[in-house]
Image (spheres, rainbow, N blue to C red):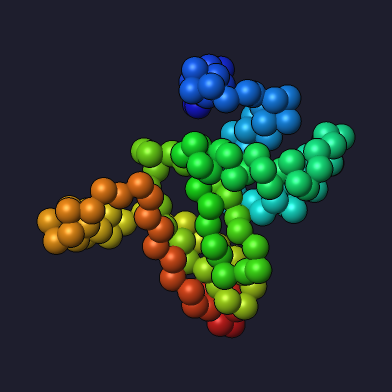
Length: 144
């Protein structure tokens, strides 16, 4: 379980203000099931269903801030907008994305992680901040 109190404390130590909106958004994102990939619009709708009113502009600024601070990962799932998920260093995963129904399937691969680390470290001496592997195709349901 991620300790939101520690996250907010660490951000304050870095000199950032933790507004009620930032706090609400991060706490909500931490409460959704693992594997959820929400767009800003999805997030706004989910918050409104809980009678929480936050403007779309504030959501975008907060998502950008949380991504820059390494708390969220911004993902392009082949749509016209970005999606966001909580960053979890202990849960490296990748995405299969159906181009027909937009279903996203997460998968883990130690081989892919190892190969990526070998390439970036041994061949390029590259300091990785984040990496994403996405495969676009047609899911089993849409093939039927």
